[in-house]
Image (cartoon, rainbow, N blue to C red):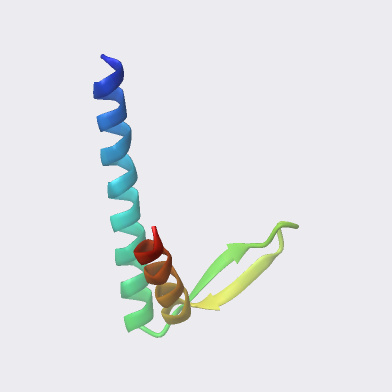
Length: 63
């Protein structure tokens, strides 16, 4: 596999992961559910999915 083909593959994987994550956030937000993340110390941090979706979409626009 050439270097360019590898880059294309990694780009497709990255796009797929981003799309999947956005769909998860949208589904959980529609159901009024929360997302659970780990903070820098490994402790659970609970965030409403709707709040995380807004934050995620803003970060995508800024990129």
